Amino acid sequence: MQAEAIILKNIRFLRKLKELKSDYMGRELGMSQGEYSKLENGLKKQWTGYLPKIAEIFEVTFQELVYNDTTNNHFQSAHSGWNTEDNSSQNFDKSFYDQLIFEMNEKEKLKSELLLSLSQTQAKLKQKFESIRSRQHAEANLF
Image: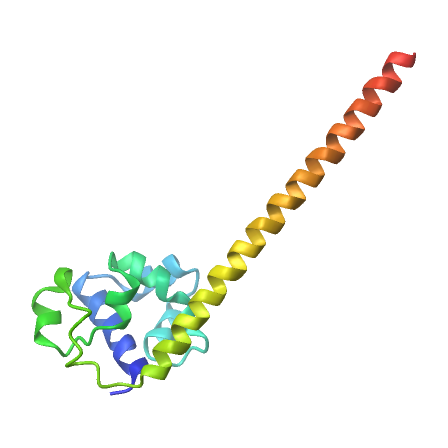
Protein backbone atom coordinates (compact mmCIF):
# COMPACT_ATOMS: atom_id res chain seq x y z
CA MET A 1 0.00 0.00 0.00
CA GLN A 2 1.29 3.47 -0.84
CA ALA A 3 2.39 5.67 2.04
CA GLU A 4 -0.10 8.42 1.19
CA ALA A 5 -2.96 5.91 1.17
CA ILE A 6 -1.93 4.56 4.58
CA ILE A 7 -1.75 8.04 6.12
CA LEU A 8 -5.14 9.00 4.68
CA LYS A 9 -6.57 5.72 5.96
CA ASN A 10 -5.12 6.50 9.40
CA ILE A 11 -6.74 9.93 9.35
CA ARG A 12 -10.14 8.49 8.44
CA PHE A 13 -9.77 5.70 11.02
CA LEU A 14 -8.80 8.08 13.82
CA ARG A 15 -11.54 10.56 12.99
CA LYS A 16 -14.11 7.78 13.22
CA LEU A 17 -12.47 6.31 16.33
CA LYS A 18 -12.64 9.72 18.03
CA GLU A 19 -16.20 10.13 16.71
CA LEU A 20 -15.37 13.45 15.05
CA LYS A 21 -17.36 14.81 12.13
CA SER A 22 -15.69 16.05 8.98
CA ASP A 23 -17.19 19.53 9.42
CA TYR A 24 -15.52 19.73 12.86
CA MET A 25 -12.19 18.68 11.34
CA GLY A 26 -12.60 21.27 8.62
CA ARG A 27 -13.26 24.03 11.15
CA GLU A 28 -10.26 22.99 13.24
CA LEU A 29 -8.05 23.06 10.15
CA GLY A 30 -9.45 26.34 8.86
CA MET A 31 -11.28 24.93 5.86
CA SER A 32 -14.77 23.93 4.82
CA GLN A 33 -16.20 20.47 5.34
CA GLY A 34 -15.92 19.90 1.60
CA GLU A 35 -12.25 20.83 1.55
CA TYR A 36 -11.60 18.53 4.50
CA SER A 37 -13.42 15.73 2.71
CA LYS A 38 -11.12 16.28 -0.28
CA LEU A 39 -8.12 16.11 2.06
CA GLU A 40 -9.28 12.88 3.68
CA ASN A 41 -9.92 11.35 0.26
CA GLY A 42 -6.53 12.38 -1.12
CA LEU A 43 -7.97 14.90 -3.57
CA LYS A 44 -6.56 18.05 -1.92
CA LYS A 45 -3.14 19.17 -3.08
CA GLN A 46 -0.49 19.91 -0.47
CA TRP A 47 -2.39 18.15 2.31
CA THR A 48 0.76 17.04 4.12
CA GLY A 49 1.16 20.46 5.74
CA TYR A 50 -1.95 19.73 7.79
CA LEU A 51 -0.56 16.57 9.37
CA PRO A 52 0.89 18.17 12.54
CA LYS A 53 -2.44 19.87 13.32
CA ILE A 54 -4.37 16.68 12.52
CA ALA A 55 -2.13 14.73 14.90
CA GLU A 56 -2.77 17.38 17.56
CA ILE A 57 -6.55 17.13 17.07
CA PHE A 58 -6.40 13.34 17.40
CA GLU A 59 -4.06 13.64 20.41
CA VAL A 60 -1.40 11.46 18.81
CA THR A 61 2.18 12.14 17.80
CA PHE A 62 3.11 12.95 14.24
CA GLN A 63 4.99 9.66 14.09
CA GLU A 64 1.95 7.71 15.28
CA LEU A 65 -0.16 9.32 12.59
CA VAL A 66 2.18 8.70 9.66
CA TYR A 67 4.16 5.57 10.57
CA ASN A 68 1.33 3.18 11.47
CA ASP A 69 -1.07 1.22 9.34
CA THR A 70 -4.63 0.97 10.66
CA THR A 71 -4.95 -2.46 9.07
CA ASN A 72 -2.52 -3.71 11.72
CA ASN A 73 -4.48 -5.35 14.56
CA HIS A 74 -2.08 -3.93 17.16
CA PHE A 75 -2.83 -0.45 15.85
CA GLN A 76 -6.56 -0.97 16.08
CA SER A 77 -6.63 -2.67 19.47
CA ALA A 78 -4.31 -0.31 21.33
CA HIS A 79 -4.15 3.02 19.54
CA SER A 80 -2.60 4.72 22.55
CA GLY A 81 0.32 2.30 22.50
CA TRP A 82 1.19 2.30 18.83
CA ASN A 83 4.48 0.73 18.06
CA THR A 84 6.46 2.88 15.62
CA GLU A 85 9.30 0.35 15.70
CA ASP A 86 7.18 -2.43 14.18
CA ASN A 87 8.15 -2.49 10.50
CA SER A 88 5.95 -5.43 9.54
CA SER A 89 3.13 -3.18 8.35
CA GLN A 90 5.40 -0.60 6.77
CA ASN A 91 5.81 -2.01 3.28
CA PHE A 92 5.39 1.32 1.58
CA ASP A 93 7.56 3.85 -0.16
CA LYS A 94 10.10 5.24 2.32
CA SER A 95 10.94 8.13 -0.02
CA PHE A 96 7.52 9.66 0.66
CA TYR A 97 8.31 9.82 4.37
CA ASP A 98 11.77 11.17 3.71
CA GLN A 99 10.23 13.94 1.62
CA LEU A 100 7.56 14.57 4.24
CA ILE A 101 10.13 14.87 7.02
CA PHE A 102 12.29 17.11 4.83
CA GLU A 103 9.30 19.40 4.19
CA MET A 104 8.45 19.52 7.89
CA ASN A 105 12.05 20.35 8.77
CA GLU A 106 12.10 23.08 6.12
CA LYS A 107 8.91 24.57 7.56
CA GLU A 108 10.43 24.55 11.05
CA LYS A 109 13.56 26.21 9.69
CA LEU A 110 11.46 28.88 7.97
CA LYS A 111 9.48 29.45 11.17
CA SER A 112 12.71 29.94 13.12
CA GLU A 113 14.03 32.36 10.52
CA LEU A 114 10.75 34.27 10.52
CA LEU A 115 10.73 34.50 14.32
CA LEU A 116 14.31 35.77 14.30
CA SER A 117 13.45 38.33 11.64
CA LEU A 118 10.37 39.46 13.57
CA SER A 119 12.42 39.76 16.74
CA GLN A 120 15.03 41.85 14.96
CA THR A 121 12.35 44.05 13.39
CA GLN A 122 10.70 44.50 16.77
CA ALA A 123 14.03 45.59 18.30
CA LYS A 124 14.61 48.08 15.48
CA LEU A 125 11.11 49.50 15.82
CA LYS A 126 11.53 49.81 19.57
CA GLN A 127 14.82 51.61 19.04
CA LYS A 128 13.21 54.02 16.53
CA PHE A 129 10.27 54.60 18.84
CA GLU A 130 12.61 55.43 21.73
CA SER A 131 14.59 57.78 19.47
CA ILE A 132 11.43 59.60 18.34
CA ARG A 133 10.14 59.76 21.89
CA SER A 134 13.37 61.21 23.27
CA ARG A 135 13.50 63.72 20.38
CA GLN A 136 9.92 64.78 21.12
CA HIS A 137 10.74 65.04 24.79
CA ALA A 138 13.78 67.22 24.00
CA GLU A 139 11.72 69.45 21.71
CA ALA A 140 9.03 69.82 24.35
CA ASN A 141 11.65 70.94 26.87
CA LEU A 142 12.83 73.68 24.50
CA PHE A 143 9.49 75.47 24.74
